[in-house]
Length: 143
Image (cartoon, rainbow, N blue to C red):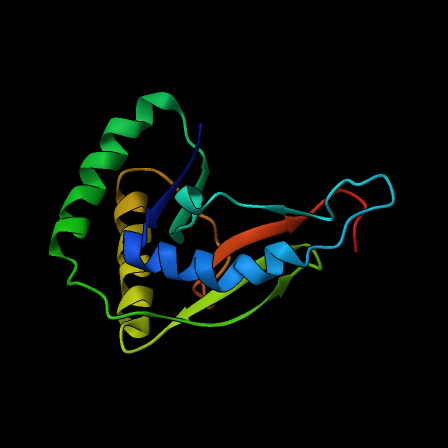
């Protein structure tokens, strides 16, 4: 199963971001057949990926969870803010996250990756330098 460790924003943050994106939803371009050019991600799925593990055998999940539990309990609250936006790979629309807790978020990501490695689960090797929430993806064939 494909797994990742994530932080889910508070309801207040989700509501704020949904309100900020409402105008973009209202002005959304469509194809001539009426199909949307953008697939919006449900706010319930908005999250900050701390570490991506990819395909993990089901039997490894209990060890991974046990390894991550102390990391999560020891993590201090993060002071983060929504900041900026952009597009990855011409198809993934994101809203950035920054603030005083950005360094702590990077440290948490490293601690999670290390704990997962100790449990025998290798994480994604891509550096997570830009904390973000994925809010939409371009529909197939859209630019």
